[in-house]
Image (cartoon, rainbow over all chains, first blue to last red):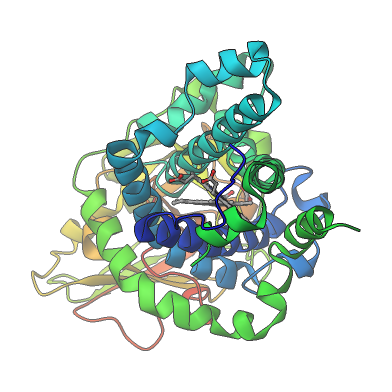
Length: 201
Length: 229
Ligand code: HEM
Ligand code: HEM
């Protein structure tokens, strides 16, 4: 999808708004999450290595929790509305099985790139929705016990459902770092600076 | 370096880099104050009345239960121990351990979740906090229960959580008498609250109509008060 026209139309305002706000709130969630991580590292417990202060937000455990749970509502609301609108109004833009086929079989490099691009940003939305679900399972393990108990899958391997849950929730961060890098590179290759401008507020 | 690399570097490097470093850490408390009232109301709503499903006794994880104490390990003489119940009650009590043991015994196999992030399945048994409060003829004016501990740890609970059928004054852990490190002879245990709400070495219960200036050892330093699970 090389853009020949000099004037790339803007994406709809709501798309840009949800996209931009999501990025800001996600940074807050990730940095405050890492602050919580440091109170008792998921890997290694009390003796485990901690994340450098540079990447954390909150200053101490209670501060990290202030941010994480202060922003979880905004994060969930933004993601939920964005997903609902996207599915209702822009479903064509989301990745689908056809993209996987194109990725494997298409002879056209731009077509393959576009398919990869669509798959990457759709995967990001799925990862973010998963962070929300695993997060809920950890804030409310008593009330949402049915959600928490889904994470018992690793018990046969000797990993408690709580540890599986913590690792799954934490995994949002490395997964998103990789996907965001891929997303930015692919957006760049698909549409260059013009597309970036069309997507920014 | 071309523009593409520059962009990638900027993103990878700066992601959360500066958030905490700037003035933002100083705002943590303000963010908490702005959002906790709503969060706590939702938590109270969710908590409802129903009991939380329990684990099987063979699922306990004794090794996972870490010990946190803010002021050492008080060793209470079981013979001289008394549980004081006062405040908005018709009949103030001073129960010795025999009187506690004479109340109906209950157990609860639950997940103990620490605010630090770890959790452990523990089997507690003892008496319901609700039974003790009713024995003392809890006044309808009561709204909160303040909990004093022998190590001067302090907590306060909303009455609904205190009366929850799985909120226990535990005297036994995993089938054995409570060890000193875990709060002997009497401690709070409930599946509906974070670990710091569950005072060890409990010596006094005071029923009040309102919350005072002091809300809890950790709460007064900035941790959430309701702390529901
Ligand atoms: C942090 C997580 C991010 C997520 C979840 C995300 C997600 C998405 C989604 C779902 C779309 C498609 C929107 C639509 O067409 O309605 C999109 C498009 C786009 N994103 Fe992101 N994005 C993220 C970060 C970024 C960043 C950091 C940049 C750039 C610096 C960026 C640049 C773009 C551009 C240029 C487009 C337009 C692509 C096109 O229309 O083909 N995104 N993003
Ligand atoms: C609505 C969404 C979310 C909720 C309800 C939520 C909830 C939680 C809870 C309850 C904890 C404490 C876990 C513990 O005590 O071990 C936690 C930790 C954490 N969260 Fe979230 N979270 C959400 C979204 C996110 C997002 C989007 C990210 C990252 C991008 C994230 C990253 C982390 C990290 C790294 C930790 C530390 C892991 C640990 O110590 O177990 N969270 N979150």
